[in-house]
Image (tube, rainbow, N blue to C red; front, side, top):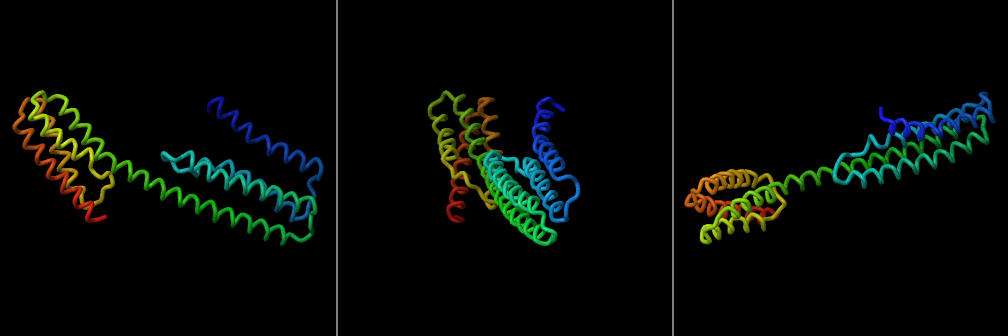
Length: 226
């Protein structure tokens, strides 16, 4: 455990230590059930707030997800702390009001928190899908650009550049229907790069034309499906 982690733990314990010292010094240990219920719910709310980082989805939007969940957990803790203190100070003999009110608060918190977590999951999945879709255009474009830079003959270079332009300008969003075409294109590009590296430019031109044809077919299918 690092020194930083130890310091964070100590910081988290400050509230618990102060709250419990004040609670027992001023109030002692003899209380009705309503007080102990409130005491337990305050601790539960604080613990849930501390555990919030473990509920945050790892993604590019982690900071945004974290802010939303922290806001919900912090708001619940503050409301619960105020409500719990009211029951502790008034110490009603019946435990029912304290239990019902704080169960309702916990239920509202759970609904809002879980709803936010579901929304975060959906956003993270959409981000991951978008990143995977970017791979086709970015990777294929980069490979073709590298091949173009190695060709000195203007006529051949222009034909390979045509393939690069079509791929680079392709629609990023993909679909399951065009994945086989994308794989064919990627394989053809790898083969084209090999041809350029060994100086087999006739084969490279043929593959560039095939790449253009397949890429245009991919884009056509995507336009139809959308």
